[in-house]
Length: 147
Image 1 (tube, helix red, strand yellow):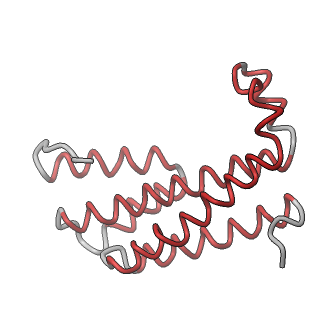
Image 2: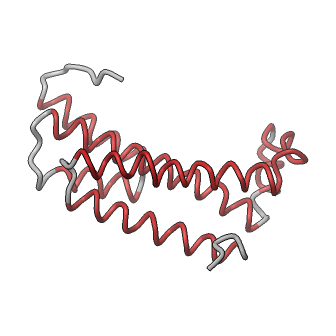
């Protein structure tokens, strides 16, 4: 199956992979090996796919469209551009989830609590990060996350 055969096939392909990646991460959030596989293989694959779509489909001729809301709306009327943007979200939300799982494990959060942070991050990336950050701040009495 060629995931790039159509925007619909790409959307389905990347969504399925992301869903199973999140499921594995939620089941084993404290596994360093799982986190390494997700970052080194899967997120890298998403990033390479994103770069391919960005460069091969619309990047060069549409760069100026990013400068206005109207231009951006026009760009996202193209299904392949929407899929490209969606892969961007999938990659960064999953990367955020991996970082949350790593830090939450380090901070001693329960294996049963970490999936709650991951669920919110999976469904609404920045909100999941915010919920984790607040919980972490309370648990550690204000110590900041070092990046």
